[in-house]
Image 1: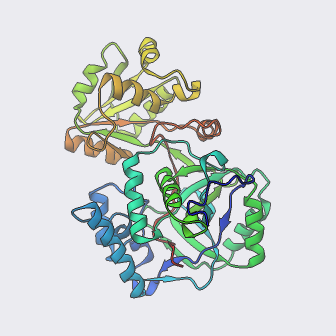
Image 2: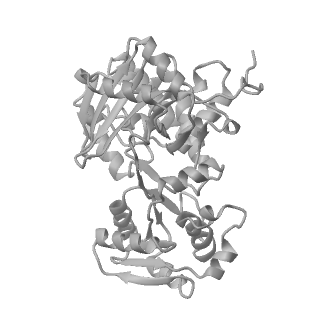
Image 3: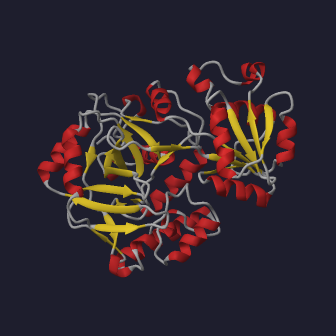
Length: 429
């Protein structure tokens, strides 16, 4: 057997989605399904959000995806022990037969998203089957890999999208029919989203979905670090084996368009006054006298005409736009497509962080936060600078990914993201 298992030349393959025996909470053993779920590990605003979720229920999934202990080794050992204990006590139980899972999210504003959760074959980058659009941080990949090794489980699905455009009619029909049946579980989380989950186990249905999905590429919408982790772990283990696959939610955005939001930056060691002073003569800076929602509207208007950012943390908002063209020419790399060179995230990292503010892109200096208000609140409390971003359009993301060009890390936030804790994949099943 080839222990690496991945070096032979093979015919091109598309997406390969495989049924698995899901590991799910027993509703009779927990306070409520909503109380044991969590946003994905990188969306939880720590420590406030982590402690809130821990106190929601003693079995909340954050005790697995974000364990707390004094050292990384202790954290991962604790997660592994917790998972073993919950399984042995029947808090988490395995479904009796392998299946794919239809997953639905719906909010009060008319947002409806449906997709399929399954175990996806982990492909090599040169296969161009799963397309990343962002760079990753090696220390995060290492952290996630250590956790997955310790638990021998995929604890939360990453989010992949594809464009069915009429070519996925069988899968779409199956999802619609399945959503008309009573679900395995239904719960409403505190963010107002209603979640429902169904299992699909009929061999004919599974084969039909597998055939149809195989004709598509997928874009990583959320979970670049988890995908990189899957690839690292697959390379470490013999093939064929359970590490050849990773847990994903696959959504057809031709039928269910996602929302694209920005991910904001919190600069820990830079006061707003110093950040603004350093921009003199390089960017235009204007104070925005408006509440957060109004300030974000001003940012959106400015972003339609070029690079724009909103700084906060001193009790006010400061719009930063109209960069000096000569400054951009000196600081932005020229070996990438124009669409990449003009991204707000590119200009933020290459020009502002690296050149103007000289802030290293490391956890000690920059935090990446999805929630806008939380970013501003933390900047005000900590004396740092919140850099609020305007989202990138999905078409730009997809076009760059197809060209093999990755955006700066944490450039986008696609959603809604799958709730963690509804279905897990234990590799020993």
